[in-house]
Image (cartoon, rainbow, N blue to C red; front, top):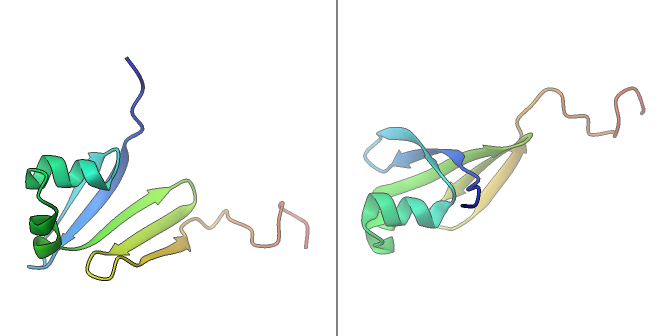
Length: 84
């Protein structure tokens, strides 16, 4: 049996509630929580947030736009530590 890479997603609903859940990808969220109905997902969910390595991603469900920001203080935009 293969290994499935799970991510921690924060699901932010349009009614202001949110929940944290583990899923391998966005389609799995739609399948498991919304019975595979992407229209219901888009109607109820405002944003998805997840983190991979040192990046934090936020997807606006309505526009489909994904913003990414560095999520760790250890990230060095100049390259390896100590080099400028």
